Length: 316
Image 1 (cartoon, rainbow, N blue to C red):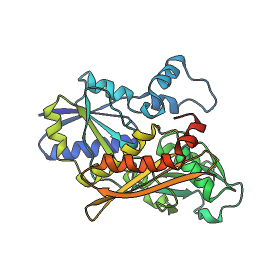
Image 2 (cartoon, helix red, strand yellow; image 1 turned 90 degrees about the horizontal axis):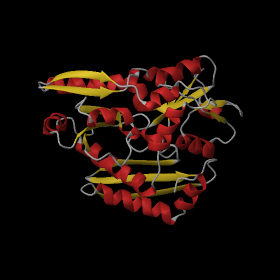
Image 3 (cartoon, rainbow, N blue to C red; image 1 turned 60 degrees about the vertical axis):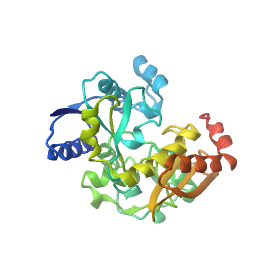
């Protein structure tokens, strides 16, 4: 049986697509990979401060920042041009288009964030004013709360592009997701790892989301063998937090769940942009109902003032 996988064309995206291809091929499937260029990929080629082309600006307005790396892939899936879409799960909005379903979530890679210094210097010893690059507001706010004397600068591009910019001296250090660095075999570049208390990850960070058409039993059966139940339950809890708070990837919301003794332990946070206010919540709950746990943690955040914090950013 032949299946076509849709993927972005970056090194990391292709690593992920090839990994899924290899797992499915081992099950006897004939697999083809089709590269699809997304609006997010095109956006990365636009220099900071440069106005967006009208068509791109319209797409950003329609799908929001969180859908930029998947819109065209989902359209190809709905048009039956591909059978399986492979995403970084943190790019996948909590509300999927009608007709699509999350067919599998494989076992998660390391969900932590990592610090990469150009000269191998520990973060704690960076001098005031040193530039640390990350385009993630989630990372920036948590870093500002711990190291307010550093300067946090935006840096666009795929992982390998950002590492090249670091080497060119665009910044003294870089903060990235550990999973991507590991998958590309670049673990030796890592200076240190952040603990989950220092840096709560993005929802779904380190996990893959394998998307299919809801009415395609062939693809559903094929990808089901890749699903890792504990990871799938954990990310369902994390995504429930994000769904209740109504945020995308451009607001400082973080959540991370792990399985412990048959229960899920979930922590989440909401922060303001300068890191001076960080609201945290933690709860445990049965793995059989991840959405209820996620909703309960989100409600705890809201009771502590998360709506006001996010409202000041303009997202809820």
